[in-house]
Length: 481
Ligand SMILES: Cc1ncc(COP(=O)(O)O)c(C=O)c1O
Figure 1 (cartoon, rainbow, N blue to C red):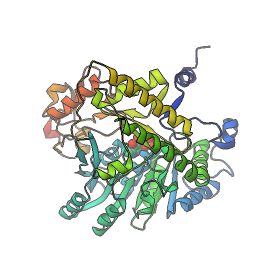
Figure 2: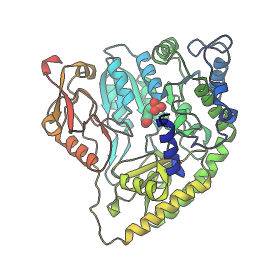
Figure 3: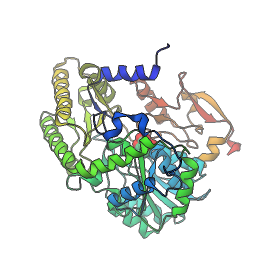
Figure 4: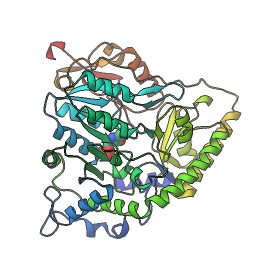
């Protein structure tokens, strides 16, 4: 028999990694999936007599969603089996009509932009405030949010990311107040924050507690759930629930996995029972070790420190580590952790490597990471050969040519990156992960962006939308728009 490629690949990967700080949040630990782990075949059923229907639930799937809604305190909660990407697209398309205006945080996930293409929406951008000292998008300015909604009263909906991939949080309650003062719908993309609800004492407030109208969560990222498992919560009467039902029916598979749905419910149960105690324990270890490393001069982000630097709040389960002052990029640090220490992080950019600590980690896992980081830092500090310090620049603010959908469907052509400067992008250019577009269809490509893409490629960062010949896709005829 030919070898089973995927099974072999997974086994190979597992043999190379001892400790992981990446998704899914169950971290491959035993017993987290409950009795299902013992016999997956038994639990893999489909819609038939007595097994309910995700699209028109009346039985045990409905009961599971009612339970989830009770735990999170929502008006209605949906299990989403196609990831938060699908929850986001469904919610945006359910709340808008083609041609409507939408205000989005510019560093939002690509699924928000995909919804705008599919729904033919006109975009307004709220750029995050870049902190040059840390080479990091700190957060959005709520005064600017207020101003933009005052200046553009026909905006229908606002979409904000909370927390970001890096754990950055703004004052979510105040954001809700502002958006509701203007009578608009606020959706919070809380893909990275489904755990916040379970440790109110030590973590930033959850979006569910803020009064936001819609909250989307990747249960699989920060909770012990199988990959793709997500939840969409509705909290207010501003949202037309019937439209959400319809969109989810249109965009989700008609054959949802019962194993996946059971794992979403299991994850909520597990967190409700153990989340607070486990998160508190892990955050305590994580914080103690972070302070120890910070005392040695290592740049590990920490909540109290960031707040003293002007950030509103930070999710203390996010390991965001940089050795850029030693001339080591985030991707290089990620590689050293992986190939020398068998520790896999979630992702890396030019400056930082980022990992997730979840409730399922053990204190020893956190110690392994911090011991390794400390050893690398001490070793690299001795190096005579000091390399150039890496400087990260703010997101280039691009001129938005016309509607995104028109650019996406316009006739296009491939151009060498340098020749594409000044042209209108036909496709996204996205460093992946984290999946935040540097360039969106309809935006004019500028020199700064191309320079930035080149540095990323040189540093081994995956950039979707740039082919192996360093070409990007641009709109061919402007008249098309
Ligand atoms: C901020 C943000 N929103 C949404 C998503 C999409 O989530 P999912 O992978 O569950 O579709 C991601 C994925 O990385 C993300 O980072």
